[in-house]
Image (cartoon, rainbow over all chains, first blue to last red; front, top):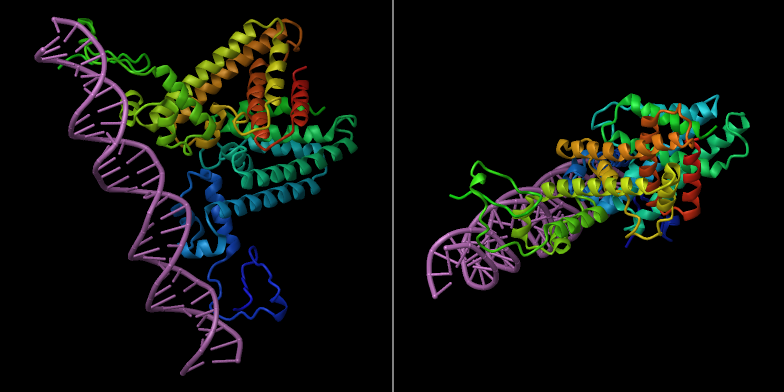
Length: 217
Length: 217
DNA sequence: CCATTTCGGGACCATTCGGTCCTGAATTGG
DNA sequence: CCAATTCAGGACCGAATGGTCCCGAAATGG
């Protein structure tokens, strides 16, 4: 009986034997867990949870079935990891873009117009994995619902920071409730992306964005 | 060989023998096709397309497997009928409520606040079947995509009528583009309902609605 | 070179999937 | 009562589902 030592970054955990040290004997990982996770995320993002089969996941990750189960557990656990990864990645990217933008309102505007400009094909108009998940699962699976809630909160936090910076920059009235505006932006993000899935034209989408932005002033 | 005569209202079709007349010999329908369709619609509405099994549909319709297939065809055809039925029913109900409302803007406000007030449980926060479908299928299945597009158009039409009436009543500036506002309302309907699926509190949802309504003025 | 460890692939599992079809019962008009 | 018709239920189907497990191969530290 030896201290379990998993070399995978994401799933490593430490027992009370861990101070002994983790001797890496045996065959090392032959794949990049991050890349595999990313691949699975892409698959779920494109097709949703139910419609993504294990076959799809094997193809997307490049793993064998046994490797996938050993590394990520069952389908739902893998999905949970993908969702977390997506939210962290996406929220961080938004945060970065906000930081490097000289106008917070400009950041918001560009973000939404970029979404409105999404080309009209299936591969690109796949929505937001987080809100897709909210739509598919709703409040049915607590395991998922919790992650969706915290993911949504992460997005809202970035939006709120953007709103408050825009208020400091004089682009949004200071008396507006930044939390409500942040939720409003999340709502419109979801709504707009969903509308794009109905096949809406680019110019119509841009008109919706313009209308939505008017509420910020 | 006799002229096929289907007593079901939804699926009746006429051959070139139909002028002979449709003699209703044999055992008549033992179920109400409308009620069965409604039941199937409820099931799809609650669980989505993929997650709803034939077993679920049999339970929801009260039909035997053979009856269901004879009456509605396969799962996807049944779903298409349910989606059409939902859009017709829902758009008509909205239209009625608009007609009987003395303020078009009030109609819009009440509609959205009612959504925001949806109790926080799984059964009630199941979103809008149309937008759920857009989310689940996206642009992948042409058969579905077309229906989603026309369903969305039906909703937008009601909203547009409401906006234009509100403009006539002086509640929305006449120079605002009613088509863009209508799409904006559809977008927010979808976004708000999706946000509710993340477990959002009632008061936060109402704050989002208030923000969204501000864009109309 | 060897003992140890974990790799990857696939055989195998029961279950469920959507879907077809057969059969006896039920209900009709004549 | 009979012939005609179509009902409802379930047996049955192949395929695919998510998931487990075994085994030879491979890569390690000593």
